[in-house]
Image (cartoon, rainbow, N blue to C red; front, side, top):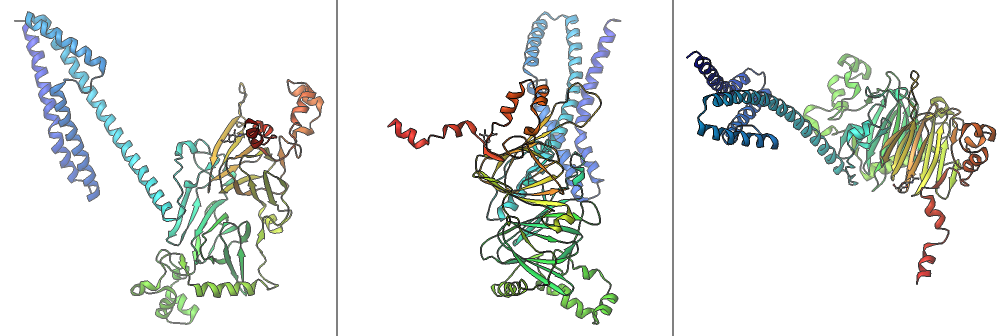
Length: 570
Ligand SMILES: *[C@@H]1O[C@H](CO)[C@@H](O)[C@H](O)[C@H]1NC(C)=O
Protein backbone atom coordinates (compact mmCIF):
# COMPACT_ATOMS: atom_id res chain seq x y z
CA UNK A 1 0.00 0.00 0.00
CA UNK A 2 2.74 2.33 0.95
CA UNK A 3 4.58 1.81 -2.27
CA UNK A 4 1.38 2.18 -4.26
CA UNK A 5 0.44 5.54 -2.76
CA UNK A 6 3.09 7.68 -4.49
CA UNK A 7 2.28 5.98 -7.76
CA UNK A 8 -1.37 7.07 -7.54
CA UNK A 9 -0.26 10.48 -6.48
CA UNK A 10 2.00 10.72 -9.48
CA UNK A 11 -0.74 9.48 -11.78
CA UNK A 12 -3.14 11.98 -10.25
CA UNK A 13 -0.72 14.80 -10.81
CA UNK A 14 -0.19 13.73 -14.39
CA UNK A 15 -3.95 13.62 -14.93
CA UNK A 16 -4.50 17.01 -13.32
CA UNK A 17 -1.66 18.48 -15.25
CA UNK A 18 -3.03 17.24 -18.54
CA UNK A 19 -6.53 18.52 -17.66
CA UNK A 20 -5.18 21.87 -16.62
CA UNK A 21 -3.20 22.07 -19.84
CA UNK A 22 -6.28 21.53 -21.94
CA UNK A 23 -8.23 23.94 -19.72
CA UNK A 24 -5.72 26.72 -19.94
CA UNK A 25 -5.20 26.17 -23.64
CA UNK A 26 -8.86 26.34 -24.53
CA UNK A 27 -10.12 29.39 -22.67
CA UNK A 28 -7.03 31.30 -23.71
CA UNK A 29 -8.89 31.86 -26.96
CA UNK A 30 -11.95 33.48 -25.45
CA UNK A 31 -9.80 35.20 -22.84
CA UNK A 32 -7.65 36.55 -25.62
CA UNK A 33 -10.65 37.85 -27.51
CA UNK A 34 -11.95 39.41 -24.30
CA UNK A 35 -8.74 41.31 -23.75
CA UNK A 36 -9.07 42.70 -27.24
CA UNK A 37 -12.17 44.61 -26.27
CA UNK A 38 -10.09 46.76 -23.97
CA UNK A 39 -7.96 47.96 -26.88
CA UNK A 40 -8.33 51.62 -27.69
CA UNK A 41 -9.02 51.90 -31.39
CA UNK A 42 -10.61 49.74 -34.04
CA UNK A 43 -7.39 48.97 -35.84
CA UNK A 44 -5.82 47.65 -32.67
CA UNK A 45 -8.88 45.58 -31.81
CA UNK A 46 -8.74 44.03 -35.23
CA UNK A 47 -5.06 43.27 -34.89
CA UNK A 48 -5.64 41.75 -31.46
CA UNK A 49 -8.48 39.57 -32.69
CA UNK A 50 -6.36 38.41 -35.55
CA UNK A 51 -3.71 37.47 -33.05
CA UNK A 52 -6.25 35.53 -30.99
CA UNK A 53 -7.54 33.76 -34.04
CA UNK A 54 -4.05 32.73 -34.83
CA UNK A 55 -3.50 31.47 -31.30
CA UNK A 56 -6.64 29.36 -31.21
CA UNK A 57 -6.24 28.11 -34.73
CA UNK A 58 -2.79 27.02 -33.91
CA UNK A 59 -4.08 25.39 -30.75
CA UNK A 60 -6.68 23.41 -32.69
CA UNK A 61 -4.20 22.38 -35.27
CA UNK A 62 -1.84 21.21 -32.62
CA UNK A 63 -4.57 19.20 -30.99
CA UNK A 64 -5.30 17.52 -34.26
CA UNK A 65 -1.68 16.78 -34.68
CA UNK A 66 -1.50 15.46 -31.19
CA UNK A 67 -4.16 12.90 -32.04
CA UNK A 68 -2.05 11.50 -34.81
CA UNK A 69 1.42 11.85 -33.40
CA UNK A 70 1.81 12.69 -29.76
CA UNK A 71 4.76 15.00 -30.47
CA UNK A 72 4.45 18.28 -32.32
CA UNK A 73 6.58 18.18 -35.45
CA UNK A 74 9.00 15.53 -34.33
CA UNK A 75 12.24 15.49 -36.15
CA UNK A 76 13.16 12.38 -38.03
CA UNK A 77 15.32 11.11 -35.21
CA UNK A 78 12.73 11.81 -32.56
CA UNK A 79 10.11 10.03 -34.58
CA UNK A 80 12.23 6.95 -34.83
CA UNK A 81 12.89 7.02 -31.13
CA UNK A 82 9.19 7.36 -30.51
CA UNK A 83 8.29 4.44 -32.69
CA UNK A 84 10.89 2.40 -30.97
CA UNK A 85 9.48 3.28 -27.60
CA UNK A 86 5.96 2.52 -28.68
CA UNK A 87 6.99 -0.93 -29.73
CA UNK A 88 8.62 -1.47 -26.39
CA UNK A 89 5.48 -0.26 -24.68
CA UNK A 90 3.34 -2.67 -26.60
CA UNK A 91 5.66 -5.48 -25.68
CA UNK A 92 5.52 -4.52 -22.07
CA UNK A 93 1.78 -4.19 -22.15
CA UNK A 94 1.65 -7.81 -23.00
CA UNK A 95 3.86 -8.55 -20.05
CA UNK A 96 1.78 -6.25 -17.82
CA UNK A 97 4.78 -5.30 -15.73
CA UNK A 98 3.73 -2.56 -13.28
CA UNK A 99 7.28 -1.40 -12.61
CA UNK A 100 8.00 -1.08 -16.26
CA UNK A 101 4.75 0.78 -16.66
CA UNK A 102 5.70 3.17 -13.91
CA UNK A 103 9.01 3.87 -15.62
CA UNK A 104 7.25 4.43 -18.90
CA UNK A 105 4.81 6.79 -17.24
CA UNK A 106 7.67 8.73 -15.78
CA UNK A 107 9.24 8.90 -19.19
CA UNK A 108 5.92 10.08 -20.59
CA UNK A 109 5.66 12.74 -17.96
CA UNK A 110 9.10 13.91 -18.82
CA UNK A 111 8.15 13.87 -22.42
CA UNK A 112 5.06 15.90 -21.65
CA UNK A 113 7.17 18.48 -19.90
CA UNK A 114 9.48 18.57 -22.82
CA UNK A 115 6.54 18.90 -25.11
CA UNK A 116 5.23 21.88 -23.18
CA UNK A 117 8.67 23.39 -23.26
CA UNK A 118 8.81 22.82 -26.97
CA UNK A 119 5.34 24.29 -27.39
CA UNK A 120 6.48 27.41 -25.63
CA UNK A 121 9.49 27.59 -27.87
CA UNK A 122 7.33 26.96 -30.88
CA UNK A 123 5.00 29.75 -29.88
CA UNK A 124 7.94 32.09 -29.56
CA UNK A 125 9.26 31.02 -32.89
CA UNK A 126 5.83 31.44 -34.40
CA UNK A 127 5.62 34.94 -33.01
CA UNK A 128 9.03 35.75 -34.42
CA UNK A 129 7.98 34.33 -37.75
CA UNK A 130 4.87 36.48 -37.65
CA UNK A 131 6.97 39.56 -37.04
CA UNK A 132 9.26 38.54 -39.85
CA UNK A 133 6.30 38.02 -42.16
CA UNK A 134 4.92 41.42 -41.28
CA UNK A 135 8.32 42.95 -41.93
CA UNK A 136 8.55 41.14 -45.23
CA UNK A 137 5.05 42.24 -46.20
CA UNK A 138 5.97 45.78 -45.36
CA UNK A 139 9.13 45.59 -47.48
CA UNK A 140 7.24 43.94 -50.31
CA UNK A 141 4.71 46.73 -50.17
CA UNK A 142 7.47 49.28 -50.32
CA UNK A 143 9.07 47.57 -53.26
CA UNK A 144 5.72 47.37 -54.97
CA UNK A 145 5.02 51.00 -54.34
CA UNK A 146 8.44 51.82 -55.62
CA UNK A 147 7.85 49.86 -58.76
CA UNK A 148 4.46 51.43 -59.18
CA UNK A 149 6.06 54.83 -58.94
CA UNK A 150 8.60 53.90 -61.55
CA UNK A 151 6.05 52.51 -63.91
CA UNK A 152 4.24 55.79 -64.05
CA UNK A 153 7.27 57.02 -65.97
CA UNK A 154 7.41 55.82 -69.51
CA UNK A 155 11.05 54.89 -69.08
CA UNK A 156 10.40 51.99 -66.79
CA UNK A 157 13.43 51.20 -64.76
CA UNK A 158 13.75 47.63 -63.72
CA UNK A 159 14.09 46.75 -60.12
CA UNK A 160 17.70 45.84 -60.05
CA UNK A 161 17.13 43.77 -56.96
CA UNK A 162 19.66 45.45 -54.76
CA UNK A 163 19.14 44.05 -51.37
CA UNK A 164 19.53 46.74 -48.80
CA UNK A 165 21.95 44.65 -46.85
CA UNK A 166 24.19 44.53 -49.88
CA UNK A 167 24.40 48.25 -50.13
CA UNK A 168 24.47 48.68 -46.39
CA UNK A 169 27.81 46.91 -46.40
CA UNK A 170 29.02 49.51 -48.81
CA UNK A 171 28.55 52.92 -47.22
CA UNK A 172 29.80 54.65 -50.39
CA UNK A 173 27.17 53.30 -52.76
CA UNK A 174 23.70 54.85 -52.86
CA UNK A 175 21.56 52.98 -55.34
CA UNK A 176 18.78 54.97 -56.97
CA UNK A 177 16.19 53.62 -54.54
CA UNK A 178 17.86 55.61 -51.76
CA UNK A 179 16.16 58.74 -53.04
CA UNK A 180 13.11 59.90 -51.07
CA UNK A 181 10.29 61.66 -52.88
CA UNK A 182 9.79 65.30 -51.88
CA UNK A 183 6.84 65.75 -54.20
CA UNK A 184 5.43 64.05 -57.18
CA UNK A 185 2.51 64.17 -59.56
CA UNK A 186 1.75 63.06 -63.10
CA UNK A 187 3.99 65.82 -64.48
CA UNK A 188 7.15 64.96 -62.62
CA UNK A 189 8.85 64.55 -59.29
CA UNK A 190 11.55 65.87 -57.02
CA UNK A 191 13.54 63.46 -54.88
CA UNK A 192 16.32 63.88 -52.37
CA UNK A 193 19.00 61.32 -51.68
CA UNK A 194 19.20 60.10 -48.11
CA UNK A 195 21.68 61.97 -45.99
CA UNK A 196 25.32 60.98 -46.47
CA UNK A 197 25.83 61.08 -42.74
CA UNK A 198 24.07 57.97 -41.47
CA UNK A 199 23.99 56.75 -37.91
CA UNK A 200 25.06 53.34 -39.24
CA UNK A 201 28.17 54.76 -40.85
CA UNK A 202 30.28 57.77 -40.02
CA UNK A 203 32.49 57.32 -43.08
CA UNK A 204 30.97 60.32 -44.85
CA UNK A 205 30.43 62.59 -41.86
CA UNK A 206 32.08 65.52 -43.60
CA UNK A 207 29.42 65.38 -46.30
CA UNK A 208 26.69 66.09 -43.78
CA UNK A 209 26.34 69.61 -45.20
CA UNK A 210 25.48 68.37 -48.68
CA UNK A 211 22.42 66.78 -50.22
CA UNK A 212 21.75 65.46 -53.71
CA UNK A 213 18.39 66.32 -55.28
CA UNK A 214 16.98 64.84 -58.46
CA UNK A 215 14.28 66.53 -60.50
CA UNK A 216 12.38 65.09 -63.44
CA UNK A 217 9.58 66.65 -65.43
CA UNK A 218 7.56 65.84 -68.49
CA UNK A 219 7.43 67.93 -71.68
CA UNK A 220 5.68 71.32 -71.50
CA UNK A 221 5.68 71.64 -67.74
CA UNK A 222 6.65 74.22 -65.16
CA UNK A 223 8.09 73.83 -61.69
CA UNK A 224 6.35 76.68 -59.84
CA UNK A 225 8.35 79.66 -58.50
CA UNK A 226 10.05 79.01 -55.18
CA UNK A 227 13.21 79.62 -53.24
CA UNK A 228 15.16 77.53 -50.80
CA UNK A 229 17.52 78.03 -47.87
CA UNK A 230 20.29 76.23 -49.69
CA UNK A 231 22.76 77.04 -52.41
CA UNK A 232 22.13 74.84 -55.41
CA UNK A 233 24.56 73.67 -58.01
CA UNK A 234 22.33 72.40 -60.76
CA UNK A 235 23.38 70.18 -63.68
CA UNK A 236 21.15 69.12 -66.56
CA UNK A 237 21.51 65.40 -67.22
CA UNK A 238 19.08 65.00 -70.09
CA UNK A 239 16.42 66.99 -71.91
CA UNK A 240 16.45 70.76 -71.94
CA UNK A 241 15.66 73.23 -69.19
CA UNK A 242 14.55 76.81 -69.38
CA UNK A 243 15.59 78.20 -66.04
CA UNK A 244 14.24 81.52 -64.87
CA UNK A 245 15.93 83.32 -62.01
CA UNK A 246 14.45 86.43 -60.46
CA UNK A 247 15.84 88.95 -58.06
CA UNK A 248 14.75 92.53 -57.32
CA UNK A 249 15.02 94.51 -60.53
CA UNK A 250 16.18 91.56 -62.54
CA UNK A 251 14.90 88.47 -64.25
CA UNK A 252 17.02 86.14 -66.30
CA UNK A 253 16.19 83.10 -68.33
CA UNK A 254 18.61 80.58 -69.72
CA UNK A 255 18.35 77.48 -71.77
CA UNK A 256 20.36 74.67 -70.26
CA UNK A 257 21.29 71.68 -72.38
CA UNK A 258 22.68 68.43 -71.04
CA UNK A 259 26.07 69.04 -69.50
CA UNK A 260 25.24 72.62 -68.53
CA UNK A 261 25.51 73.75 -64.94
CA UNK A 262 23.89 76.65 -63.12
CA UNK A 263 24.54 78.00 -59.66
CA UNK A 264 21.38 79.09 -57.85
CA UNK A 265 22.45 81.02 -54.76
CA UNK A 266 20.38 80.39 -51.64
CA UNK A 267 17.20 82.44 -51.54
CA UNK A 268 17.02 83.04 -55.30
CA UNK A 269 13.45 82.71 -56.51
CA UNK A 270 13.38 80.56 -59.62
CA UNK A 271 11.11 78.48 -61.81
CA UNK A 272 12.03 75.75 -64.20
CA UNK A 273 10.35 75.06 -67.54
CA UNK A 274 10.66 71.95 -69.65
CA UNK A 275 10.09 73.59 -73.04
CA UNK A 276 10.62 70.43 -75.05
CA UNK A 277 7.77 68.91 -76.97
CA UNK A 278 8.61 65.28 -76.30
CA UNK A 279 11.64 64.98 -74.06
CA UNK A 280 11.66 64.53 -70.32
CA UNK A 281 13.90 66.85 -68.38
CA UNK A 282 16.27 65.35 -65.85
CA UNK A 283 18.25 67.52 -63.50
CA UNK A 284 20.53 66.86 -60.58
CA UNK A 285 21.19 69.47 -57.88
CA UNK A 286 23.81 69.53 -55.22
CA UNK A 287 22.23 71.33 -52.28
CA UNK A 288 24.31 73.10 -49.66
CA UNK A 289 21.87 74.09 -46.91
CA UNK A 290 22.37 77.35 -45.06
CA UNK A 291 20.56 77.05 -41.74
CA UNK A 292 21.04 73.47 -40.72
CA UNK A 293 23.58 70.93 -41.86
CA UNK A 294 21.98 68.69 -44.48
CA UNK A 295 18.47 70.14 -44.11
CA UNK A 296 16.73 72.69 -46.27
CA UNK A 297 13.21 73.81 -47.15
CA UNK A 298 11.54 74.90 -50.37
CA UNK A 299 9.35 78.00 -50.04
CA UNK A 300 6.67 78.12 -52.70
CA UNK A 301 5.15 81.40 -53.70
CA UNK A 302 1.75 80.04 -54.70
CA UNK A 303 -0.62 77.59 -53.09
CA UNK A 304 -1.31 74.21 -54.56
CA UNK A 305 -3.31 71.34 -53.24
CA UNK A 306 -0.05 69.89 -51.97
CA UNK A 307 1.70 72.94 -50.67
CA UNK A 308 0.65 76.20 -49.10
CA UNK A 309 2.05 79.51 -50.27
CA UNK A 310 4.42 80.97 -47.73
CA UNK A 311 2.44 84.20 -48.03
CA UNK A 312 -0.47 82.38 -46.51
CA UNK A 313 1.49 82.11 -43.31
CA UNK A 314 1.05 85.81 -42.58
CA UNK A 315 -1.87 87.14 -40.59
CA UNK A 316 -4.77 88.87 -42.32
CA UNK A 317 -3.69 92.20 -40.83
CA UNK A 318 -0.21 91.98 -42.24
CA UNK A 319 -1.50 90.89 -45.65
CA UNK A 320 -4.16 93.63 -45.80
CA UNK A 321 -1.66 96.28 -44.79
CA UNK A 322 1.01 94.98 -47.16
CA UNK A 323 -1.18 94.72 -50.26
CA UNK A 324 -3.55 97.50 -49.36
CA UNK A 325 -6.54 95.29 -50.08
CA UNK A 326 -9.26 93.42 -48.28
CA UNK A 327 -8.23 89.98 -47.12
CA UNK A 328 -11.06 88.31 -49.07
CA UNK A 329 -9.75 89.83 -52.28
CA UNK A 330 -6.17 88.84 -51.52
CA UNK A 331 -7.25 85.36 -50.68
CA UNK A 332 -9.34 85.04 -53.81
CA UNK A 333 -6.51 86.22 -56.07
CA UNK A 334 -3.53 84.58 -54.47
CA UNK A 335 -4.67 81.54 -52.60
CA UNK A 336 -7.92 80.43 -54.21
CA UNK A 337 -10.99 79.57 -52.23
CA UNK A 338 -12.02 76.25 -50.88
CA UNK A 339 -15.06 76.26 -53.13
CA UNK A 340 -12.93 77.09 -56.16
CA UNK A 341 -10.50 74.25 -55.63
CA UNK A 342 -10.14 73.70 -59.34
CA UNK A 343 -8.45 77.09 -59.57
CA UNK A 344 -5.64 75.76 -57.46
CA UNK A 345 -2.92 73.67 -59.04
CA UNK A 346 -2.75 70.05 -58.03
CA UNK A 347 0.96 70.06 -57.31
CA UNK A 348 4.07 72.15 -57.74
CA UNK A 349 4.78 70.81 -61.24
CA UNK A 350 2.11 71.98 -63.67
CA UNK A 351 1.34 71.62 -67.34
CA UNK A 352 1.85 74.55 -69.74
CA UNK A 353 -0.03 75.24 -72.95
CA UNK A 354 1.87 75.57 -76.25
CA UNK A 355 1.06 79.24 -76.24
CA UNK A 356 2.53 79.83 -72.78
CA UNK A 357 5.65 77.88 -73.74
CA UNK A 358 6.07 80.12 -76.79
CA UNK A 359 5.68 83.29 -74.73
CA UNK A 360 8.13 82.17 -72.08
CA UNK A 361 10.64 81.15 -74.75
CA UNK A 362 10.42 84.55 -76.42
CA UNK A 363 11.12 86.25 -73.12
CA UNK A 364 14.08 83.97 -72.56
CA UNK A 365 15.64 84.92 -75.87
CA UNK A 366 15.34 88.64 -75.25
CA UNK A 367 16.75 88.38 -71.76
CA UNK A 368 19.80 86.44 -72.94
CA UNK A 369 20.84 89.52 -74.92
CA UNK A 370 20.93 91.67 -71.81
CA UNK A 371 24.35 92.81 -70.71
CA UNK A 372 23.98 93.60 -67.06
CA UNK A 373 22.10 90.64 -65.82
CA UNK A 374 22.24 87.93 -63.23
CA UNK A 375 25.70 87.42 -61.89
CA UNK A 376 25.59 83.66 -61.99
CA UNK A 377 25.65 82.51 -65.60
CA UNK A 378 25.19 78.96 -66.70
CA UNK A 379 28.31 77.21 -67.90
CA UNK A 380 29.02 74.29 -70.17
CA UNK A 381 30.97 71.54 -68.45
CA UNK A 382 32.52 70.70 -71.82
CA UNK A 383 33.45 74.22 -72.85
CA UNK A 384 37.17 73.53 -72.65
CA UNK A 385 39.13 70.49 -73.74
CA UNK A 386 38.87 67.35 -71.67
CA UNK A 387 41.71 67.07 -69.19
CA UNK A 388 42.11 63.40 -70.03
CA UNK A 389 40.99 61.81 -73.25
CA UNK A 390 41.72 59.08 -75.72
CA UNK A 391 39.62 56.80 -77.86
CA UNK A 392 38.24 55.06 -74.77
CA UNK A 393 36.99 58.08 -72.90
CA UNK A 394 36.90 61.78 -72.15
CA UNK A 395 37.17 63.45 -68.76
CA UNK A 396 36.08 67.09 -68.45
CA UNK A 397 36.68 69.15 -65.37
CA UNK A 398 35.58 72.64 -64.35
CA UNK A 399 37.61 73.68 -61.35
CA UNK A 400 37.29 76.56 -58.88
CA UNK A 401 40.45 77.93 -60.49
CA UNK A 402 38.56 78.29 -63.77
CA UNK A 403 35.26 79.56 -62.37
CA UNK A 404 35.16 82.12 -59.56
CA UNK A 405 31.68 81.06 -58.48
CA UNK A 406 32.87 77.52 -58.01
CA UNK A 407 35.66 78.99 -55.94
CA UNK A 408 33.08 80.38 -53.52
CA UNK A 409 31.59 76.93 -53.18
CA UNK A 410 34.98 75.20 -53.28
CA UNK A 411 33.55 72.60 -55.64
CA UNK A 412 34.72 71.19 -58.97
CA UNK A 413 32.50 69.56 -61.58
CA UNK A 414 33.29 66.60 -63.80
CA UNK A 415 31.62 65.36 -66.92
CA UNK A 416 32.96 61.95 -67.90
CA UNK A 417 32.31 59.62 -70.83
CA UNK A 418 33.85 56.15 -70.85
CA UNK A 419 33.26 53.81 -73.75
CA UNK A 420 32.13 50.27 -73.19
CA UNK A 421 35.01 48.13 -71.92
CA UNK A 422 37.03 51.17 -71.04
CA UNK A 423 38.73 51.37 -67.66
CA UNK A 424 39.49 54.59 -65.83
CA UNK A 425 42.85 53.69 -64.34
CA UNK A 426 43.33 53.48 -60.59
CA UNK A 427 43.86 56.93 -59.09
CA UNK A 428 43.05 58.92 -56.02
CA UNK A 429 42.02 62.49 -55.34
CA UNK A 430 44.46 64.24 -53.11
CA UNK A 431 41.90 66.23 -51.14
CA UNK A 432 38.51 66.26 -52.81
CA UNK A 433 35.56 64.08 -51.83
CA UNK A 434 33.86 63.13 -55.07
CA UNK A 435 30.10 62.59 -55.33
CA UNK A 436 29.55 60.70 -58.55
CA UNK A 437 26.11 60.56 -60.20
CA UNK A 438 25.54 58.05 -62.99
CA UNK A 439 23.64 59.56 -65.89
CA UNK A 440 23.71 56.74 -68.43
CA UNK A 441 25.16 53.26 -68.63
CA UNK A 442 26.66 50.80 -66.22
CA UNK A 443 29.99 50.28 -64.55
CA UNK A 444 31.81 48.29 -61.92
CA UNK A 445 33.62 50.42 -59.43
CA UNK A 446 36.34 49.38 -57.01
CA UNK A 447 37.27 51.55 -54.08
CA UNK A 448 40.08 50.74 -51.68
CA UNK A 449 39.89 51.75 -48.04
CA UNK A 450 42.48 51.53 -45.33
CA UNK A 451 41.15 50.82 -41.84
CA UNK A 452 41.05 53.70 -39.41
CA UNK A 453 44.21 54.08 -37.38
CA UNK A 454 43.77 52.14 -34.20
CA UNK A 455 46.08 50.89 -31.54
CA UNK A 456 48.92 48.71 -32.66
CA UNK A 457 47.32 45.84 -34.52
CA UNK A 458 48.86 42.77 -36.03
CA UNK A 459 48.50 43.73 -39.65
CA UNK A 460 46.32 46.34 -41.26
CA UNK A 461 44.37 44.76 -44.08
CA UNK A 462 43.02 47.08 -46.73
CA UNK A 463 39.40 46.74 -47.73
CA UNK A 464 37.88 46.74 -51.19
CA UNK A 465 34.41 48.15 -51.75
CA UNK A 466 32.83 47.20 -55.05
CA UNK A 467 29.55 48.21 -56.60
CA UNK A 468 27.68 47.74 -59.82
CA UNK A 469 26.61 51.20 -60.82
CA UNK A 470 23.72 52.04 -63.05
CA UNK A 471 21.56 54.99 -63.99
CA UNK A 472 20.74 57.38 -61.13
CA UNK A 473 23.10 55.66 -58.72
CA UNK A 474 25.31 57.80 -56.54
CA UNK A 475 28.77 56.77 -55.38
CA UNK A 476 31.03 58.70 -53.05
CA UNK A 477 34.80 58.53 -53.45
CA UNK A 478 36.43 59.92 -50.30
CA UNK A 479 39.67 61.86 -50.53
CA UNK A 480 42.79 59.70 -50.83
CA UNK A 481 40.84 56.49 -51.44
CA UNK A 482 42.16 54.77 -54.57
CA UNK A 483 39.45 54.00 -57.10
CA UNK A 484 39.04 52.43 -60.55
CA UNK A 485 35.99 52.43 -62.81
CA UNK A 486 35.29 49.68 -65.33
CA UNK A 487 32.59 50.70 -67.82
CA UNK A 488 30.54 47.64 -68.73
CA UNK A 489 28.51 49.70 -71.20
CA UNK A 490 28.94 53.19 -72.61
CA UNK A 491 29.01 55.25 -69.47
CA UNK A 492 28.29 58.89 -68.74
CA UNK A 493 28.56 60.32 -65.27
CA UNK A 494 28.76 63.67 -63.50
CA UNK A 495 30.66 64.37 -60.36
CA UNK A 496 30.75 67.06 -57.71
CA UNK A 497 34.12 67.41 -56.02
CA UNK A 498 33.84 68.79 -52.50
CA UNK A 499 36.87 70.58 -51.03
CA UNK A 500 38.06 71.03 -54.58
CA UNK A 501 40.62 73.78 -54.50
CA UNK A 502 44.09 72.53 -55.48
CA UNK A 503 42.90 68.98 -55.68
CA UNK A 504 45.33 66.72 -57.51
CA UNK A 505 44.27 63.53 -59.26
CA UNK A 506 47.13 61.08 -58.76
CA UNK A 507 47.14 58.10 -61.11
CA UNK A 508 48.67 54.85 -59.96
CA UNK A 509 49.24 53.42 -63.43
CA UNK A 510 49.72 54.69 -66.95
CA UNK A 511 52.27 56.95 -68.48
CA UNK A 512 51.00 60.36 -67.42
CA UNK A 513 50.20 61.83 -64.01
CA UNK A 514 51.48 58.62 -62.50
CA UNK A 515 52.53 59.40 -58.98
CA UNK A 516 54.34 56.12 -58.41
CA UNK A 517 56.64 56.54 -61.37
CA UNK A 518 58.12 59.63 -59.72
CA UNK A 519 59.62 57.53 -56.95
CA UNK A 520 63.30 56.79 -57.64
CA UNK A 521 64.60 53.31 -58.31
CA UNK A 522 66.68 53.32 -55.10
CA UNK A 523 63.51 53.58 -53.07
CA UNK A 524 61.74 50.92 -55.14
CA UNK A 525 64.64 48.64 -54.35
CA UNK A 526 64.03 48.73 -50.63
CA UNK A 527 60.25 49.12 -50.77
CA UNK A 528 59.37 46.17 -53.02
CA UNK A 529 60.57 42.59 -53.20
CA UNK A 530 61.37 42.91 -56.92
CA UNK A 531 64.53 44.57 -58.16
CA UNK A 532 64.40 48.32 -58.66
CA UNK A 533 64.67 47.84 -62.40
CA UNK A 534 61.80 45.34 -62.55
CA UNK A 535 59.55 47.55 -60.49
CA UNK A 536 60.29 50.51 -62.72
CA UNK A 537 59.57 48.48 -65.83
CA UNK A 538 56.26 47.28 -64.43
CA UNK A 539 55.12 50.71 -63.28
CA UNK A 540 55.92 52.30 -66.62
CA UNK A 541 54.75 49.42 -68.76
CA UNK A 542 51.39 50.87 -69.59
CA UNK A 543 51.78 53.16 -72.54
CA UNK A 544 48.36 54.73 -72.41
CA UNK A 545 47.13 56.94 -69.65
CA UNK A 546 43.85 57.52 -67.88
CA UNK A 547 41.63 55.24 -69.97
CA UNK A 548 42.69 51.75 -71.00
CA UNK A 549 40.98 48.60 -72.23
CA UNK A 550 39.26 46.70 -69.42
CA UNK A 551 40.22 43.43 -71.09
CA UNK A 552 43.88 43.96 -71.94
CA UNK A 553 44.79 40.43 -73.09
CA UNK A 554 42.02 40.41 -75.64
CA UNK A 555 43.10 43.76 -76.86
CA UNK A 556 46.58 42.54 -77.69
CA UNK A 557 45.15 39.68 -79.69
CA UNK A 558 42.94 42.14 -81.45
CA UNK A 559 45.91 43.56 -83.27
CA UNK A 560 44.84 41.08 -85.89
CA UNK A 561 41.23 41.89 -86.69
CA UNK A 562 38.81 39.09 -85.97
CA UNK A 563 37.56 39.15 -89.55
CA UNK A 564 40.98 38.28 -90.93
CA UNK A 565 41.28 35.37 -88.50
CA UNK A 566 37.92 34.11 -89.62
CA UNK A 567 38.95 34.67 -93.22
CA UNK A 568 42.06 32.55 -92.72
CA UNK A 569 39.91 29.69 -91.51
CA UNK A 570 37.98 29.55 -94.71
C1 LIG B 1 35.40 44.83 -66.40
O1 LIG B 1 34.09 44.26 -66.34
C2 LIG B 1 33.90 43.19 -67.23
C3 LIG B 1 32.45 42.78 -67.12
O2 LIG B 1 32.12 42.50 -65.81
C4 LIG B 1 34.87 42.05 -66.89
O3 LIG B 1 34.69 41.00 -67.82
C5 LIG B 1 36.29 42.57 -66.95
O4 LIG B 1 37.18 41.58 -66.55
C6 LIG B 1 36.44 43.78 -66.05
N1 LIG B 1 37.78 44.33 -66.24
C7 LIG B 1 38.51 44.72 -65.24
C8 LIG B 1 39.85 45.25 -65.58
O5 LIG B 1 38.13 44.68 -64.09
